[in-house]
Image (cartoon, rainbow, N blue to C red; front, side, top):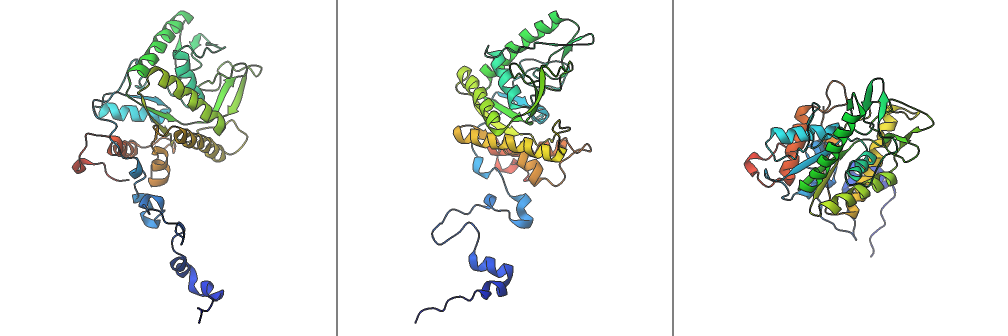
Length: 331
């Protein structure tokens, strides 16, 4: 005699916990079996204890590896941590501002990233070379750099472009952190500025939000330049967790920030899917999803101890000179 059909009310009477017990985890079925890994599940109260880098483990960096950095203000924090910990950090040019591998300042967008390396290797020349503001000559493409004469500005630019070339040619690993999808740009050639133009002209300058396709194209063009001039360079990409401080879009800052990060994250995912050798390190997810209280008092910048934990996890994941006894604390 066949088994009686299950009553429709059985699931209702069982309650939600019983339903889960009857049906099993969402990712399982009679016809599908896959390895169940802890980092694939939310885990309720233990979610913050899950290791988001377990699938990335490989030996990539030792203290002798030449590491370069570029990107947003979070990239500056990464650079500072590497220097403090005694890693072999590439520094081809320095000024009075915070240390980076060259004086490109904070590189917030993928458009700036593409321009930085393209310009160094003669593949990009902007229509607007300088901003002449008050008694200063201001660089539209490098954050917070200005001179009292155009001759000094030009001399600094020549030195800078040479430094960028040396960064690319000497680095074994490049950690690239992108942070924003909002940009101001020139209407003629699309050259992206690091801020709202100091000499704003509505006939020349426009606000623009980079969509995922544009971000992906910028990443592809950047990578092509890097691989052309250093075929063995290992690229590690991250997304800055630091939110927007202001939006020029006519909408809530929270909504604008969500789009900005989503556009970049989608592009980074597609980029890494196309190039499996490129590593996406989930610093963004660690800070925004796994840390309970990551922010400084301004609610934007990440606490130094959180940066330390993220970077310890980075080296725990990709470093080759650690031991199990001194592995980083888990987030």
